[in-house]
Each structure stands twice: as structure tokens, then as C-alpha cells.
Image (cartoon, rainbow, N blue to C red; front, side, top):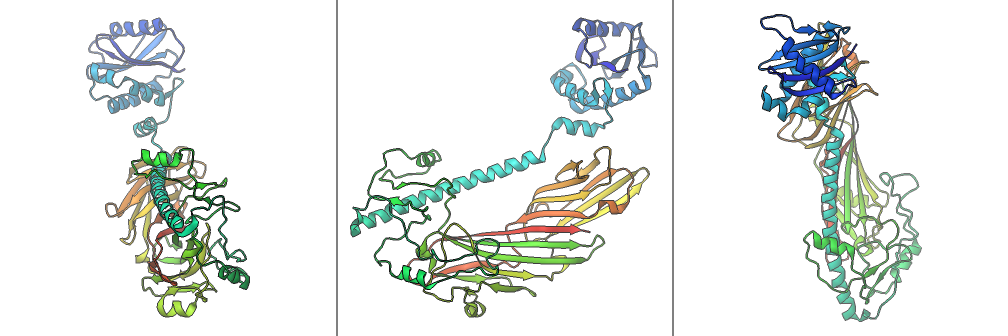
Length: 525
């Protein structure tokens, strides 16, 4: 049989909280609970009383009674076990075991009762699990909020850059009008001298058969342009479309309105009319350098580095064709075993002697467009275990009928690690593991039978951390291999662009760098 109701009463018979688990009228449960104080005697040691129809199993909690109402056919041993669980749960939620404390947390206590009893049957749970289920904390939700906040910050940066580009376009427009271009109207396509170029924009740009493909026709087409033609817009124009100058827009720009709402100062003036394509990429700086390193690491469970492979790439994105006549000054940390390779169209002698990336023919600009072009890659396959960004140790030990697993991590001072996830395989389990202590968040993946330990950020405040969980007896090999994933805003080689030189003189265009370290595979085997 099942538990009919779980209630908390005062010793005078006042009902503070009552949760029914079967269908019964309110008058019926009120009558049963009103009769309970009259049935309880004084000085008796037993914790149950019976009537003709029901049994009351109760336990005093200071000045209150915790009462279970069950059928007489119910197993009293199971009822006593349920009563003990509920007596541990109530103090977890009630600030004080009196009328005010119970009434204040009435709904929380009812929710906890629902976790302990399902349709009147006791669930095999602990107090810690009940609290965890009631809190309903979601690591995925936290990550989603973190990513959402990051996107909002990025959108604000994009809006500020867009406002700067609009102001620049106004200045350029004023120059065009003073230079005799005020009568230009209608769309005008910006010709590119690199329509015949075959550029590998996927991967690292070093694939066989790919390259810059600088043909003579493209050089002629570029050299035949009038020298006094206005500079191309910082944004790559769509095919067949362009910018109209000399006309005022009739409709208010919603984007400028959103900028005003953010507090940006917008100068009201004639705005260029831009016809956009269906897919518009977010605007970026005129020149963007992307530096990325990927790690593949395998560490022995008893210590020792079995495999270390680091591969890095440097790619370039230029939006304006006039900004393509540049050279990149490269700097990096001097590390043994670090080897570089440049694209076939890069001047290797210049790079080897001065660490400058430039085309073999300085009269040809770098390709432009929205796609990144790979210029250089590097690799390193030797590293000491002490130089790893993150080390993880696992210590399983069997004690009685349980296996205690202690895991600890230690991070180096080289990087601040983001979105760290340590995935520990588990033996087949009927119930989730019991986590006794953890620095961070955890999630049990029942489908893959693994425990994921997540730390959003590892910096100087938490260079080390630990976790302990308990599972039924299992062999120590069941908890390996441990998989680790993280990202960092720095690289091992510390490759960076120290500066940009303009080959044809003039102002050096603004550029930005994106640096990231990513783990492709990191295992403790």
C-alpha cells in the first residue's frame, strides 16, 4: 500500500502543511488530522497509532509532529524509513521548527515531499539529492547565459565599429564632393583586380593546388585603373551592388536609432544608401589577423607525457583592396622544436631573415574579401609535462561497498582557461553518483555513463581544484580515459603581429588580432 498523506501539525492539532498523495476530499483529510492529537497518548514509546481504517506513523520534531497517514495494510518498516527521510528533509528547508518557520517555507517543504514520495511510494534518495533536484540548477543554462552575455557585448562592439565606419564614409564623401565627384549617383561596382585569383580560404590555406594564383590578367586589370578613382569602401560590396553617393535617405535608419538607444552620439547628415544582400556578415576592422593553435595531448594515468602535438595557423582577412599592399612583422617566443612554414606565394627569404610576411611581388596586394586566407602555419611535437596548461590526476579507492574517486586538477600560470570540461567515464550505474565535494559544477550523463566536471574559468584565483564522488565497487580502469576540453586566449608559441608596414606609404590601416588556443583531443589514459 501507499502513503495517503504527509503532514506537519502542532501539538494542539493545528495543521501547518499537508500533502496528499491519493485522491481524497479535503473534509476527509481534515477529519483524520483533527483526530490525531486525541489518539496520541503521553509517556508512550511507540511512534504509531491505529484506528479502524488508517494508521498514523509519527515523530515529534521539537514542538511539532511529523505525521504519515497510511492504510493499515501498509508495511510499517517502510513507513518508518520514509518518516526518517522526511524528518531529515524538513530541517533542511525550515529556518526554525515552529509555526512561522514551517509556514514561511511551506511550498519548499511540499516540493521536497514530492521528491521523496512518488504517488505515495518512497523514492530511494538522500537528503543531498532531494535538495539538488529541488534547486534544479542547470550547467547548460549558466553556459547559455554566459554565451548570451558575450554575444551582447560583441554586438555592442560591432555597433560602435559601424558608427565609426559611418563617420569615415561621411568624411570620404566630403572629399569626393570637393574633388569633383558630387554628381555621382546610382550604384557603382568596385572593380577588383583579383577576380582570377584562386585562393584557398578553407583550413590553413596550404593545400595542394591552392594558392594566391596571381595571374598577369589580374595585374593588368588593376594597373589599368585610373589613379584618381576613390578608395573602395571598407566593407566588401556585394555582387552587382554598390554605394550611392550624393542622395539623402528618406527613411530613418533603424540601426542608427539602436545606436542612439545605446547612448552613442550620431551626427545627422546625408547617409549613403546601401543595398544589402540576403546574407550580411558582421563588419570587422579593415584588417583582421587570426592566430589559432590546436592541441592533441595524451598523458599516462601514472604520469608521463605520451603524445604532444601542437599545430598553429595564421590567417589574414582584408576588406579593402587598397589596404592589401602591406607586410606583417611577426614575433614569437623562442621555443625548441618550433618550426614554421609559409605559403608558397610568401617571400621566404624575407621571413627567414627578418620575420616579415610579405608577397614575393610587392606590387601585388593581398587578396581581399570576407574569407580568411592562410599565410603561415607552425608545429611543435616536443614538450615537458610540467609545461602542460592543465594536468588532471584521478585516485580511485575501494572502501567497503563503495568506491571513492578523488580527482584534482592543477593549471599552469601560462593561460587563463575558459569553459573547462573534465569528462570522467563511469561503470554502469543504476543511480547517479554521489558527489561529496566539488570545486565547480557537475552533470551526470546517463546515456554515455560519464560524469562531467565543469569550470567556467580557471585563473589566478583557482589554479587548483578537486572533486570527490562515490559509486558502487568498480575497477580503477573503469574511470579512464579522462577527456579534457578547454579554450584559452593565448598561445604556446606567443605568435603575434607586432606591426603592419604599408608598402606604398601613407597611413597604416587599423588591424585587430584574434588569438585562441583550443584542445582537439586531451586525454589521461
